[in-house]
Image (cartoon, rainbow, N blue to C red; front, side):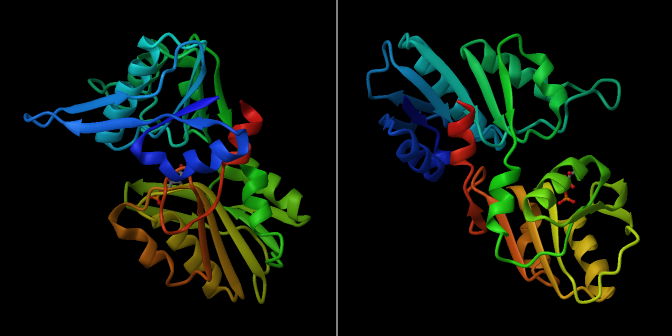
Length: 281
Ligand code: R5P
């Protein structure tokens, strides 16, 4: 393989390249005088097996990604694999109100125009996979998360909502403990109501796992309730550390250890998904 890296995924590119023994393409990036983005892949991709690696969340990352994907396509590679660690806009995978777009459909269609296959890591909702006629894989990274906690003496694994219960169960199985979920009701984008499972948290080490941390509202509330009910140590892991509104600092108030993966590169990225991507390719 040869990997074409987008600026959002430089560290993950190095980690994946060393695991695949792959080359990394040279890319030039600059802005036109009017502010528009210019990219050029300097390495020859003709007849190569190419991976274009990067996120589609922030708008400039999204534009860079689509430009790089097309630049790779125009070089006529043997295969072109779109690997998107954090597939942005996947929360808007349906119209919640008339007049809204199906955002994840827009970008899936744009990507499949040029790619032979698409791979995302724990996409927010698998409904998005249906928008592509090309093979679209959703890579689960449960074992990589569990492995990070193997020496943390975890007693329970808790998902902050029923949608993440499969993840919690799978991580708990790896750690040979029990999994539970919190009944969560979202009031608005910043407020959630929670009903704890019926467990005795006193003096227990608890791992809260979620697909993403955005405003942090979900894990802050869950960790506060668990700490108030006597939990010893609270560990929090999420696949994607979006950390909007500077939420990491607030999360640390009741949390002993915060870890996210390197799908989004942050100072809490302690878990790499490069093995999971390598195994899924
Ligand atoms: C919800 O469905 C997700 O699994 C996460 O719990 C949620 O997106 C986290 O968002 P926030 O950090 O803003 O509470």
